[in-house]
Image 1: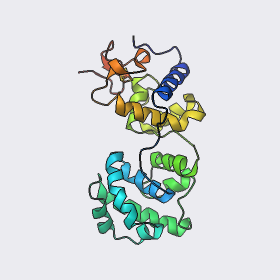
Image 2: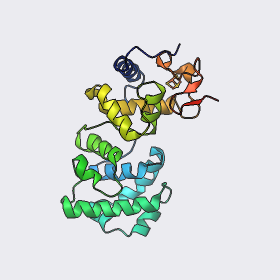
Image 3: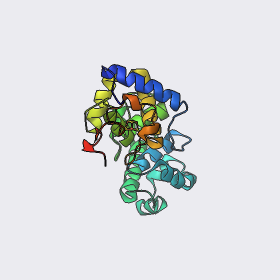
Length: 228
Ligand code: SF4
């Protein structure tokens, strides 16, 4: 059928309910054992798969253990150490610079506010939200990655296009107690079923609510283009 519920509030609550049933254990898939490792892993994960990041950090976190290790690292050597990661040169530079800022301004600790985190070089609102949620248990916003962006648009939950605008819009309709989990549910469903190129609408638990369903709609609302 593929028809959204009457209001966006009702639509988002029903989608969340069903995805919770489908993915009860959905959580962050990056490996880390402390806040510093979390920050590094999230910085590395921009435009790169979590799987690749986890492969690379297995050795990285043995070689660099403290903020001082990163702050004193040679950028070229660190870049080689993360050589299979997308944009590894820039990311090595961001990591060394951020570690130096943490040493100079934050007693070597990973900051626990949005403002302080986003002052670190290369750390945007998305990275900061993940670090706050999973490192400090502070939920200040909704992490909008490519899956959240795509699914929220496909399901008619938002019409915004830029991540910052999508986050603001979602914060007005996703109940606050679900802000953290909403991201993980979208990522799980985006990986398992509602993939970017070839969503499996015939096997989707929210198909009857989806105004982009390929079973009875011509247009993918995420891109605004017709399905091929
Ligand atoms: S898999 Fe298809 S029906 Fe399900 S949310 Fe994605 S586009 Fe909609």
